[in-house]
Image (cartoon, rainbow, N blue to C red; front, side, top):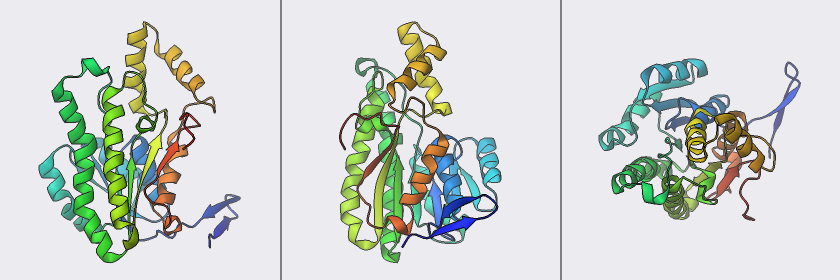
Length: 274
């Protein structure tokens, strides 16, 4: 049963997601959509480790969240860092990780023929292998304990390939395939695995996409931003506040029967029926 808790101070209903005290690891969780997911989880009482490459940004992000969060500096594309991360995170949390949010910055924009093979390798290392490696290291413990949540922050391009984003169009789909396989293998053992696909979200990461499109079409950033918003049925770009609560819900016991899904937070941008 879903319980709504009414707060007289705010005048709003708040759903209790039953996550207080759970330990979570949020990759690339210091800004943008990863940070939005972290804030939503921390608001439900989840104790978190945020991972990011910039120490000053990461420390500020953990401080903004407060007592529920700490920060570990590292790069998801570094295999040695990934190998040591689970033990570092569980030491910081003083408990086992029950929630994994995988996330990483998207690969460079560009057309298919513009991308050298090294760019493809780097994109797969960061946006596919890194996520798989962390999941392989953490999911066995989740299955032993009978509870776990893996939520992969990917992109709407896994279902709706986007112009001038050949690398992202490819690696997002590859990760979805891997995680679909994992979801079936652990479905009966208390662990769910889902993808959340942001659409065109008004975060810092969007700026490079806007700049690349403006350069390609000889336009300016303001015009490109307006054109992107016009492509979306809701008529606006998405925000971090649109996104974080979806991740938090999928991590909760209330979402026990949702697994192997790719859920779009895109304002209706994807044209397909599912």
